Image (tube, rainbow, N blue to C red; front, side, top):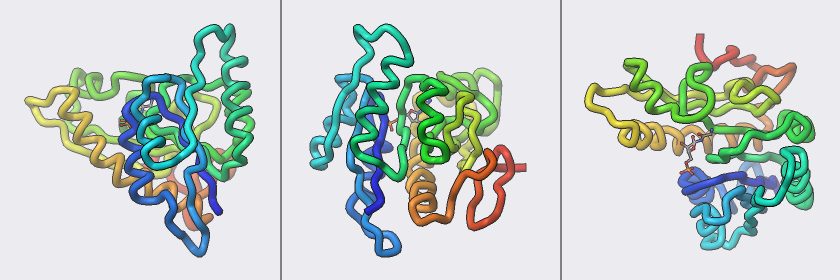
Length: 213
Ligand code: GAR
């Protein structure tokens, strides 16, 4: 079995998509299972989605926890019970300490709603509109110590139209998220994708640093 732990903070449409497309499926004779969904928000709808799918889930909230390191230690304790092959960040809106990330080298993927290296951090859709960009998109990348800067695995572009609101644009981007994240996860779990010397390697090919030249 290939085991996935999903980290999220909110709605969990990416989780739902991964449940629908990959959970309890078989890939190269290997069973894929989401073994746990963990949230830093107690009211994240993603937890309900996990519940509905019969997947173990837990909120680990930061209230009353004094330091980032202490929170991250609780989170990694929880994760380590499951010994996952892959940690999938799907709308997890908390910065993780280097100490945490170093525990799972080359085993964490994140999806970020911009064409990295553009627009690291939050509010990416509004920032792309405000900058007058004509295109925007989404990136799946390996998680490394530096925020939103690990090796890019796959990107998808969408146009920005003149009347776009951040909400409309976010929706257009989400549609692409739901196409590319399952691909990246399948590549990883089948051994086609790995992180080597901070680069993403797909079928032995080094991907350009930011996914496109
Ligand atoms: C997605 O757009 C994801 O790319 C973004 O949060 C949204 C979660 O949606 N992630 C980040 O901004 C990470 N910094 P979802 O809860 O419906 O999957």
